[in-house]
Image 1: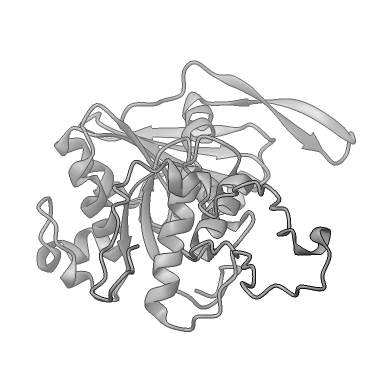
Image 2: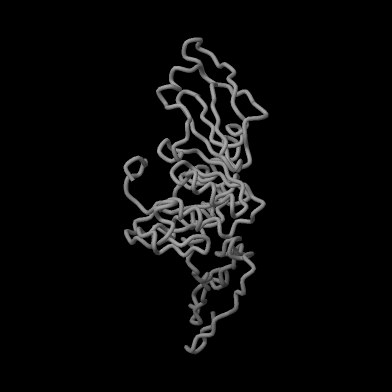
Length: 298
């Protein structure tokens, strides 16, 4: 993964919502033939959709049809859009220039001569999807089967020459993509907050840690306190609290005074539980464990 901040690691395909909630994860294991998919056969569809397109088809098999899907340009292609349109999904995505199926849209060099906010669009022959080219700082290609040009919106962008923010016109497909895209990036950001370091070099431990971090990012309260409670719970050992008892010798010196013969006064100790509130109120059955050794019960 040369273009990633972390060059080496495990690749996990993720289906996330707008709020960065993880619905499904698939561990990438190299061969696209091992993908279990009911929507497309990998042997026949690998050349048509590519290995990245098969990942999308594998993830959307449990997605209800009423949901809209937003995907990155790494996975998207016009053939994938047509396939998902046949399945009844609404989809919006960015495209790469070599995946437009010879669309007559202007090249990036031609777009560079246009002013900011310029756009072009082409509709397919069956009128099921639209390809839009829009110039921001560079050309952006988008494809959708449910969002188009109207209604147009205005976006704030920084102008280097005027040294201020200016309004530029953008199609509706741009507004929808910016609004609903980025759930996976938000999930990665939450996982990177307050990491819990561990020294294990086993590959399966790192995968379990990634799953735990992604689950912790879904908490209803602050992420730092949630991870702190998890760390305290894992570090807590079930130690028994032992109270020391005072013993009085039965042999009393006859020459000692009465005050010296009096037993020491016992001070009341405040009983402090060694069990945290998380363990005490986790709704689990904390039953006693009976040990075969005599006079020992836990």
